[in-house]
Length: 420
Image (cartoon, rainbow, N blue to C red; front, side):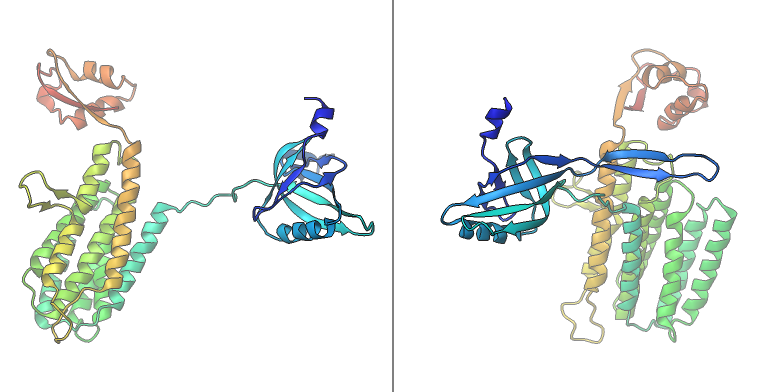
């Protein structure tokens, strides 16, 4: 299209609130600037100039409203321009522009025309930089909030029987957790946490909140042990099941509050552990889904209409339902703390959503049945490819639990699992 044809095209401004205006116009100027950084060095002549991406282009506007109603139209334009949302300009020379004005000069010195001039800057439509919520930091933060809310809601005085149960549970926590420690400093710190929790439990009648804080510290420790994520989460689930068994049939309110606090702490620790995998964890979808099952799994395939609770979280909720009393009118009435459960629910939902995201990007499991006698080397070459360090061969052996007796030969019909 020639410039003559373009100049005959209407100049249209659509302001942020939706009003459109068709002024006359003169002049067409634009100014392009770049993001630049200048670097001067003490022992070097000259300046290093680093140029980045272009900044928003600046356009000079010279607009006119004329006619009997030009004052009314210009006033309407001034009012519409006060909206902070960007303008969309259909410019005869420059096409469609999304801009923000830096200011407007309104000139009414000529009685039969209103002249409006100013500069507009082309704008992007999204705020940058984009901020993304870090899932690990958020899970750790909500974990702390959940623990604090549980402590804040703890208003019971443990009895002598409660203290005995707490001491027995502490021993169970430590016995299971110490089996998976791999580092000397972890073992020492965990042992100190165990001793501190036991000492605090002995004084739980006079200092219940301190005792529960120390038990929380013991419960939380395995979440960040330097061992595989499945080992950590499975261990904490085992600790939770032991706690669940000890609380079955509890009738007094302090016992129920102790279960609520410790159970919430163990489950939130499982979520924290799931969010902190080691480098070799979560290599495939099965690895991720196994962790999700330990957290929230429910098996509905075995007995129709009677689901089997697998995950610690649904087991915890079911136990709280059984411990809850119809109302809070009695001294031994127990109703779970809403704030604690809300924070725990948010934590579990967020963690599971992130685990599903990981699962969608992880490798998928495939199954192959050997068509003839073969060996590990040939299968590794076929499905993964061989490497000098035999990493892929180790993966094939571990995933399929291939023992010494099968190193030389895998029989026809042998089930082989591999990941793509």
